[in-house]
Length: 86
Image (cartoon, rainbow, N blue to C red):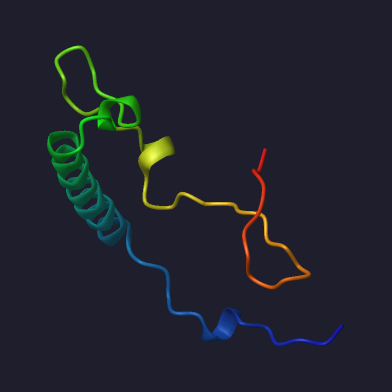
């Protein structure tokens, strides 16, 4: 019913060059982490997509920085996950 408008208090949006640099840094660190997982974990190929040559496949839509994770929360017991979302 009542509230505060947060827009005047938000920081200014980053410049396009800053966004691209942040995306590139996130991609590089994610790819390094996935390569390490492929080497260390024997069953990682089932979960990490690779092409025919064994190179990692990157899709900005799937693996991008702004992915959202959704979990169900049991409201009766507080912050406890249950069931599957789908």
